[in-house]
Length: 230
Image (cartoon, rainbow, N blue to C red; front, side, top):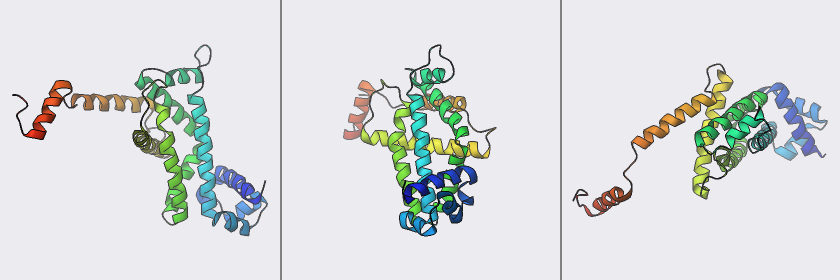
């Protein structure tokens, strides 16, 4: 490996062992066997190196989780197979809950990654380069998240709709992980999230606008000022 790859690998190890805020440039040099000039040459600063490593770590976590979500159910339907079976269910609520079970479970095996991500947010306030790197990672997340929560046979989302869905799930994911990082005993479970989603869907369904002929009449009345009841 070259110095750039050595630094990235060292940064990942340091992040896992010490956390974002406690890694020094000297730690990175010692761990990688490189020198301070290499950090500046390849990444610009220690914070930019740590942010690049963090984004790769989150990407590795996402790849691993996605592979689990898309895996075929195990024979007998036990363990991971149960969650994979739920994730493949035609019932969107069952799939939603199954996916969140895996997301939250994976959080506890990648705890430093998420805590480091929260710490990196604070660093981004002071470094445009770090903020830009994190913004790029967030945008990748918006593009990738939507398929996790939708059954394989569901109608495909358009480009704009897919990004909007991904942004929604990213906001939910970030909020859930922050709550688990601060208060894991009382943070929302997959069941809590699904229960809330069912209620939201029910509320929106009760308030849904008229459809079919009633909707056409209302739209025509709005456009022409006529009374739709006539």
